[in-house]
Image 1: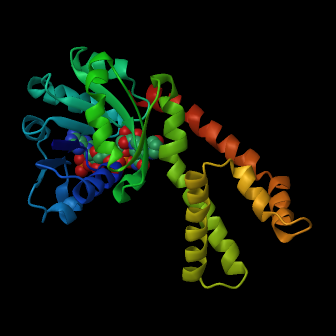
Image 2 (image 1 turned 90 degrees about the vertical axis):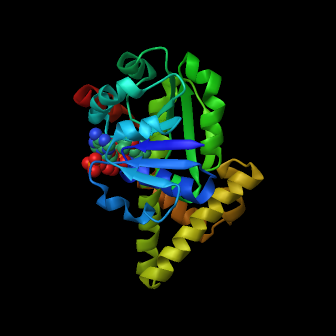
Image 3 (image 1 turned 90 degrees about the horizontal axis):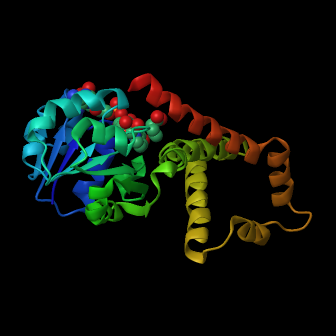
Length: 266
Ligand SMILES: NC(=O)C1=CN([C@@H]2O[C@H](COP(=O)(O)OP(=O)(O)OC[C@H]3O[C@@H](n4cnc5c(N)ncnc54)[C@H](OP(=O)(O)O)[C@@H]3O)[C@@H](O)[C@H]2O)C=CC1
Ligand SMILES: O=C(O)[C@@H]1CCC=N1
C-alpha cells in the first residue's frame, strides 16, 4: 500500500502515527510546508517527508487530504496535472462535499470522504465514510485502511456533518468530561495523577461494557444505582443542572457551525 497524507497537521500526524504502528506500508509520504514538526517520523525507512505535494501524489495510490478547508482547492489545483484515475482521493476535510471535490478534480476521479478522529493515532478511531460513484467501487480499500485503525461505518453523505460532530469533535467533548471528572476526584482528595487515572479507566470501562455487552446505557445505569444510594443522588443532581441537555445543545451548536465553516472558507 502506497499512501500519501497531504497536509500533515494535527489530524494528519494522528493518521500517520496510526499507519506506521498498525499497517504494513510500502511507502508513506507525509507533506507539509514546514517539516520541522514531523521529525518523529524521520527514522521510519518507508516514510518520506516532503514539501512537494506533486512528488507525493506521483509516488502513491491512496491520497489522504488533511489540510484546512480553505486550503483544499489551492492544493488540488496545483496537483491536478499529476492526479490520475488510479488514485483514491480520501478527503477528511470538514464541510467539503463530494460534489465540491468533483468540481475541483473532475467527476472521473475516485473520491471517498472519511471522517476519522485523533484517536486514530492509537488505533481507536470511529471513522465514518461516504463516496462518489467511482469511489463506491473502491471504498473497500479505504475501509481496509481505516478498519486497522479502529472502526468504520459507511453512511449517506447527508449524515457526514453530524458524524463530524459526534466522532471528530466528540474526542474533545469526551476529554472535557474526563477532565471534569478528574477535577471532582481532586476535590474529593485524590492527587491529580491518581484522579486522572480513575477518570480515564472508569470511562474506558463504561464504554467497554456497552461495546462488549451490547446494552443500552440505562441498563448499565440501573445496575449501579442502588435505591436511595449515592449514585442516583449524584446523577439526578447532574440532570437538575442540565448535564444531558447541555451536551445535546453543544452537539447541535457544533453541527450548525459546520455549515458556516464551509460558507466562510470555500
Ligand atoms: N483535528 C481533528 O481532530 C480533525 C480535523 N479534521 C479536518 O482535517 C483537516 C485538518 O485539520 P487539522 O489537522 O486540525 O489542521 P492543521 O492546521 O493542524 O493541519 C493542516 C496542515 O496542512 C498543512 N498545509 C497547509 N497548506 C499546505 C500545502 N499547501 N501543502 C501541504 N500541507 C499544507 C499545514 O502545515 P504547513 O503550514 O506546515 O504546511 C498543517 O499542518 C481540516 O479540514 C479539519 O476539518 C477532521 C476530523 C478531525
Ligand atoms: O473543529 C473542527 O472544525 C475540526 C473538525 C472536527 C474536528 N476538528
